[in-house]
Amino acid sequence: MRRVMLLCVFALVLSNPVAAASGDHHQYITDKIAHYSSAFERCKNVADERTQPEDGVLSKLREYPKAQVERFLMTRYDLAMQECTKPESLELAYAILVTETLELEQQTKDAISAIKELAFSGDNRKLEVMYLSLPGEMRQSLEELGYFQKPFDDRLVLEMVSK
Image (tube, rainbow, N blue to C red; front, side, top):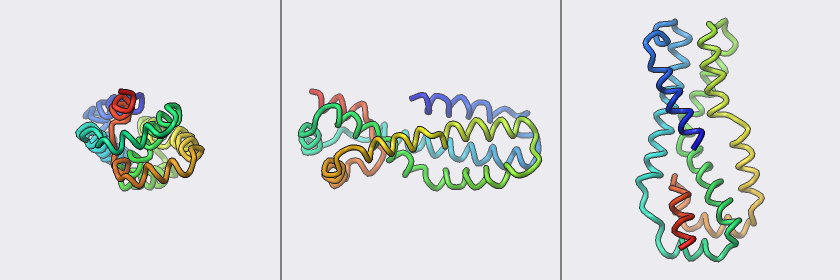
C-alpha cells in the first residue's frame, strides 16, 4: 500500500512542468520513471479488476494454516506485480545505470534516488525470501491453480478464505 501511495505522489511530482524542462538527462530518467509508474498502475488495475477466485482455489488455500496463507498471498501478490512490471522495471534499471554515471543536476539525482528506493528496495528481496520459506509443496500446489500467475487482490482473497 505504501508503495502505491508513494508512486502516485512521485508521479505528481514528475508531472511538474519545471522538472520536465530541466534537460535531456532529467527528461530521459523522468520519462522512464513515468513509464514504470504507468505500468505499476496498469498491473494494480489488473489486480483490482480480477474476480474473486473460484471455490476450488479457496478450498485449496483453506488446506493450509492461516499464517502460511497470509504469507503466501502477500508475497505471491508482490511477485506477480514484479512479473507484470518487469519490462518497464528493466528499462528503468538500465536508464538509472546509464544516467547515474553522468554529471546530473540535483533534481535528477533526487528523482533517481527516490525511484530506486521505491522500485528497487530490499523489500522485494525480503518478500521473495519469505515466499521461498513457505513449504515447497504448498507453493507448487497453489501455483498450479493458475489464479496466482497474474496480479490479484491479496486482501480480497484472504477475506474470501476467512469466510
